[in-house]
Image (cartoon, rainbow, N blue to C red; front, side):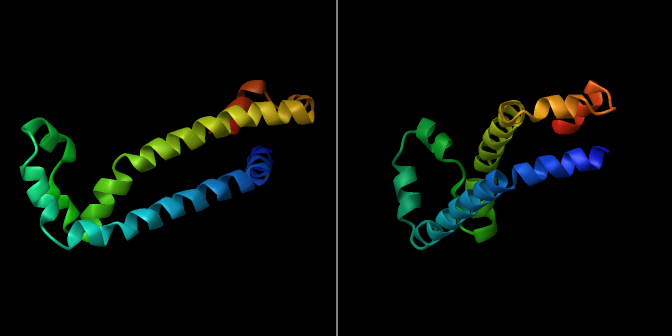
Length: 125
């Protein structure tokens, strides 16, 4: 029973999830296009050295920008993935109950012979 509720939820939200994944891929592609500008010359190092120490702390370690793997880790996966994923989960969780209520599916789901706690837990896990 639970797998059918889970598969129904995934099926209902497939375009939402696909749209967010396409947006994330576009962000990753945009970050990759900036890598040559960070990697080519030492002008960024010179610029950071002229900044006050407080601003140097905001920029972080420039050695992270020298290799592609550390560049992606520091620029994309460090904070952006967490923020984007959190926003997506919040919007998805809020949309689950509202969409089912508006479509009139809440009554059908609640009439199933399972406890409401199990149904709620399965929808949000």
